[in-house]
Structure formats: structure tokens, C-alpha cells
Length: 628
Image (cartoon, rainbow, N blue to C red; front, side, top):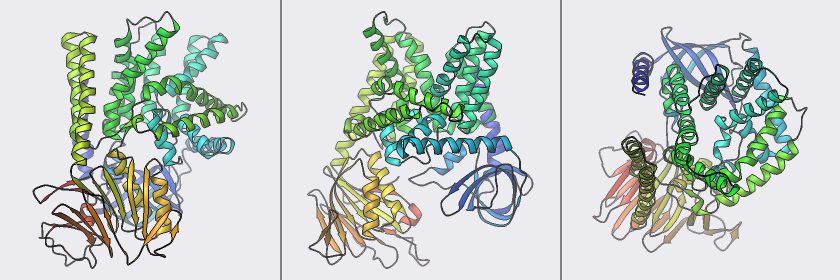
């Protein structure tokens, strides 16, 4: 293990010095780029995002992305861009673009590209055929099973989540079965198990069986577009069956370490990939930690096997939990239970979908998958609406504490080697998590917190305090509701007392209604219309102003400005174009910043520069500001 870590650190350092730093040094500069198209994603409005692997200015080797109107380029074609600006991928509250692309070895994106030419190579015919076949199968799933059920099956078979409804995806993750939507060890294991069982029945020799297994693994990985989690599972599966082939003993821990090392040799920045980390943690949990903790548990009777399976799932969830909380807005608390009762059903549905894909639709049992998936979606939707089924926390200190407990648990295992001490350490971590989350919740309720969310002129304000939460949307842009949804999820807020809509009321109402499906929304207030009327549950207020009094704080909207008061403390959120700076409080200016704006005033924050942040009104009369 010491050699493993030393070699990994060496490869990472060399890769950073040789590949990463020369590329990011081009950030903000201009030049040319010539590269091969390695991936294409199409969007609405005939736009496309291209991943290019080539050279900057003919010398610096780099992998970049370029978003533009569709150029008609396909995988394998060459793009020659005569002039462009290089930028590090942007990140904001919704999406950490820099880390996401970095895990795939993409360090720059191209802007203001000119003099573009496409050289069609008509290459990668097999890869293109596999992609077309994959899209045909996904369309067949949706046609036979319906939109949501078909998308769930597409996620389970191909790891395809782009077309899935966000609320369906959230309910599946809250239910604790979200790992079924990423092609990894379970998918590869189930597919290989079914194949090897059939080959054994047909008395196919072990060498031919191994070759056929390789073909199946390659097909499954190719159909899922080679995610790193599937590659990890494929490598470990090779170790497992190769050990039998060459009469050697397979060890899960060593196989996992070797798979991680092999992947990181070729792509050291895979350690930034969330799916990769969760896949490794889950495999370690079920294949190493759970087996060690449950090896002496009796399993002669049915109830004993059930208890042992529950313990295995609990151990696996404990290994994944801290990383899931680190990477995502929330994580499931009921995954040990759902993995016992629901995952077997999902596995059946996945096998049916895989058989359908392997036979080109000849063996069609999708009607069974339809019933299974609809049941799973119904259960997931019910579970997602129950507060205690999932856990969320926006505290870096709490997550850091849980990661520290992982280190303490490992040290405990090395020093004492007894499971009772390991259990005590884990129990302490669980107590720390829930007590810490409770303290954070009490602190949040005891003070007034103002979250200013959005980008540029698109802004929404979320005010929390005294157990109450209010939303005031200032722009009416559909993306504002996404920012609010993420903020509420990360802070475990499941109910909102008032939602105020000030622009494009009907469209913004539809956006919030969709994004806040799992939130208990109270009153809907909107400017415009007849003051005495109520339309679709929306109450209109006149004079373009409204005051919300929650006791611990009050929020006033008037003419595009939001003023929040808590005791003798105040904060003002107003437009950078025409808004006035408050002399006795912090002022947040959203929208395009005028060129002559006075940036020397420390009490003024520009949303266009800061993007998303939280303002906590302190008892001393000032405020604390935290970037989200």
C-alpha cells in the first residue's frame, strides 16, 4: 500500500507539472487550436458542445471544450480554429464546471472562436454505430414504458440520465437507489453472472467463456460511453475470473487497489470524479468492510441471512455516506433498507432491459420492466416527500468532521483490530453528525440569513429566520428557481411560508411549482393584476409593493428593491441600474454593473461579480458574508 500511494503521488505530480500547468497557463490568452472531436453533445436550438483533443498554437497538447451552433462535426473529425480565447471552465452555485471537466482531463474551454474549418474524416464507424444503436434502444424504452419509466430503465442499463426529469431523479436518489443510474459494479456483475450461468449450462469451456465475458464487458462499457465507474468494475471483474482461470486466489481489496492504480496511471485527475470516488467507496464497503464486519454472523436460517444482509447494506451505506454528503446536496438515510427490498426489483428490470438491448429487441419482456419501474417510481416519490428519509447539511465543518472520522476509524482498525472498537468509532461519528446538524439548525433558526442567488440580472432572495423561510424572486427567469431549489435542499428546508413573484408571474410560477415539488409551499404572492383577484392560487398585491412579517424578521419588496430587517439590523438588495445604496446597511446590487460604479465602498456587494452568497445579520449590528 505504501508503494501504491507513493507511485500514485508521483504520477499525479508529474501529470500536474507536464500536462495541467502548461495548459491552464493559457487562461485568458488568445491563440489557435487544432484537434480531433472526441465527443459531441447536442442541445436545443441546434447548438452543440464539442470535446476536442489536440494542440494549442500547434505545440501545447490539450483537451478542451467548445460550445457553439452545430458545425456538423462528428466524432473523429478535425476542427481547425484559427483564432479563439482560452478560459478555465466557469463554475457557479449550480455547477462546478472546473472540477467536472478537470476529472476528464479537460482544463480549458474555447471562447470567441473565429476562422473555423471542419475536416470530415468519416472515422470511428463502429463507435458511431454503437451510439446510434444506444439511442435507438433508449427511444424504444421510452416508447414501450413511457417517459419516466423508460428514462429510469435507460439510466439502469446505459447510465443515461440527461433526459430524466429532475424530480424523478431526486426521488430516486432520496430513496437510496440512485447508484442504479450509474453503470458500475452491480451492472457489470449482474450481466456477467447471467452470461456465465448460461455458458456453464451449455458446457462452454472456461477459456471461451472468459473471451465471451470480455466481449460482454466491452459492450456494456461502450453502451454506457465508458464511464470511469464501469471501467473500474470491468478491471476488477477481469481479476476475479482471471484468478479462476489461472488457479489463483482473488482478493477484493487488492483488486480494488490495482484497478484504482491502473485507472489513475492513465488519468490521474480521475480522483476528482465524483462517480469514481463513490464507486470505489461503495465497492470497498460491500466487498471489504462489510465482509470483515459480518464474517462471524450466523446465516443458517432465513431470518439470520436477512439480518446479515441488512448489516452488509448498512456497512456499505456508511462507507458511501460521507462522500455522498460531500458531493451532492443531500443523501439517503433509508438506503440500507431500500437496497434490500428495491434493488432486487431494479436488477430484474435492468436484466430485462439489457437482454432487450443485446438481442436488438427480439426478446421483448419490457412489459415486466414497465410494472417494476412504475412501482419503484411510486415508492421513490412517496419516500422523497418524507423528511426523515434523507439528510442534508451545508456545513463544510460537519463534512470535514465525518471525513476525519474515516481516518480515525482506519487508525482504530490498524491499532486494535477489533470490530467492537470500530463500531464505537462509527457510532461516535453518527452521533457527531446528527448532533452537529441539530446545532447548525438551531443556530440558523436563531438568526436571520439572507441568501442572494442567481447570476447577473437574474436574482432571487431567500430569507430564513425563526423557523420561517420566504422567497422573493426579482427577475422571473426560469433558472432562478433552480438556484432556490438547490439552496433549500442543501440546507434541509422542506417548507416555505411565502413565495413572492415580481416579474413574468405565470412563467416563473410554473418554474417554481416544478422545482419545489418536494417543498411544502405556503402562500404565493405576485405583483400586478387585480389586487382582489386570486389566480391559480396566486394572490396579487397592488402598488408593486408587499411586506412580509415573520416575527423574527420582516421582508419588504418595493419597486425592484428588497429590504430585510431583523431587530435593528437591515440589508438592502436592489438593482445595479437605478438602485440606491443604503447608508445604514449592507447593499447588494444585482444586474449589470455600471462602468462608473464606486467599488471602494465595502458595504456594497455586486451580484454580477460575487454571483451567490449568504448574508447573516449579526447581533452586533453588522453582518457576516459567506460565498456559496
